[in-house]
Image 1 (cartoon, rainbow, N blue to C red):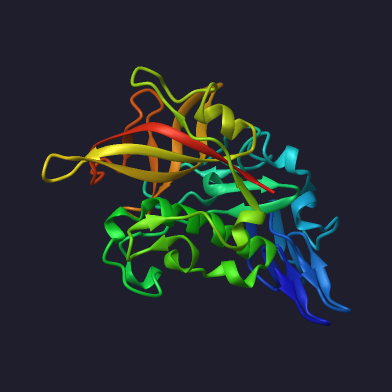
Image 2 (image 1 turned 90 degrees about the vertical axis):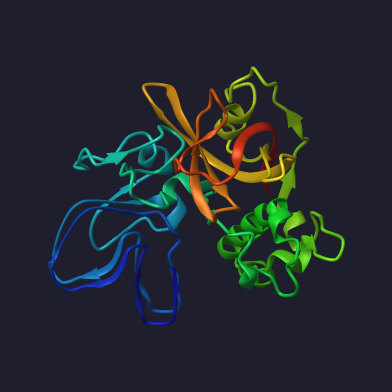
Amino acid sequence: MTTGDGAKAGGLIGHLEGGTVAEVYAVGRVAGGAGATLGGLVGLTLGTAVSNAYWDVNTSAQAVSAAGTGYTTTQMRSAPPIGFGNAWAITAKRSYPFLNEADIDLAAPLATLVAKKRVYTFLPIDQRDTSQYAGASTGANVASLAAVYTMIARAIGITKNVAALKDVKIDKYFWDDATKTTTWQGPVTTRATLGTFAAIAADAALNDSNVIGEMKGGKLVMLRGTYTRGNGANAKHWLLGTLFTAQGGMVGAVIANDPWSGEQVMIDPLTKKVVSPADFALANFRINGYRPVTLN
């Protein structure tokens, strides 16, 4: 959140004048011009009741707020904050609190990565949506990898204020519709580094030796799998793995952005299949390889 001279800005609310606020938090960077009134959670409040409210003092770059309690990134991600009810869950040490509700289409904290005190949120993109392309998209059905690159680029563009990447189209740098090929190129390559691709054996789970281990190391993970087309042929498909859920030290599901549906999905780490949504469209899809991504 960035505001101008003399304005009021907060990570959640700029000027709070009435009502009640409870069980909320903010993690985004807050900045303003000369004379601005800034707060990590609330810029200015007129005595409104605020309870069980928090902000991240590291990622917001704000040590004070008109209301709420400041926590470090480590504190915010260790457990749901004091006063948060049973509706909240967390992947300890990895995620911010998220609402544990099955009908939520996008659990943003599970699509969020913190690197060097900056917060990156990776939003799903539908590879078959023609509005995501500047030109022809006759090969959109096989452009999943290019869509994954675009998700990475847009998140970096928004967080680092890179105009060329904020709303970048799939075919601006990554997808060539004429040749139906994908290339990692453009301004994003100086801001993110792709690791080496590694195959995952058919009898291996997603665990600390591969995908989960990379995520615990603070990396994104591009996930490759195969599915069966209508004609019976196998085809490759890529997703962007962002994080995982865990309880009691046990991994529940790998969370990923799926370009085919344009949605956040859950993958069973044992079967390597998409389990949510239950009606995932790609028949017999299963993860068989991955490539880590480091934000520079």
